[in-house]
Image (cartoon, rainbow, N blue to C red; front, side, top):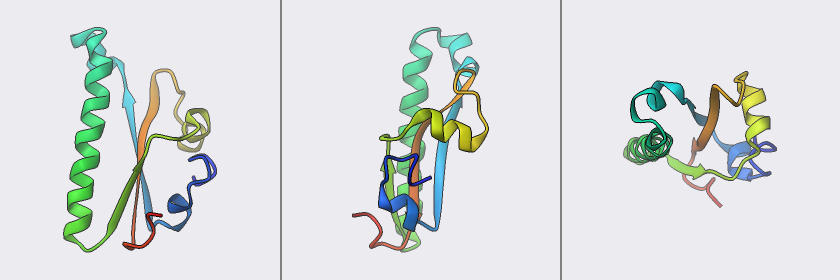
Length: 98
C-alpha cells in the first residue's frame, strides 16, 4: 500500500490503512452530477471521525489523497469505474505521521 500511496512511509509503518471507496451510482442516481461532490464530502467526514476515534485511543491518524488510483483499486480488487478509491487513512502509533 505504501508504494501505491506514492511511497508515503506512514502507510508502511501504520498498524492499519483504511481505504475509503465509493460505488458512485449509489449516490449519483439520486443527486446526479452533484452526487460526485457529495461522495467526496462524505469521505472527508468519515476520515475526520476516524481521526477523532484514533486520537481518543491514543493513536495517530494521517490521511492521504496522494495515491495511484489504479494501483490501490487493483490491491482492493475494485474496477476503478463502478467503484473506486477516494482517500486513505493510516492509523498507528503517534510518531508515524512524518
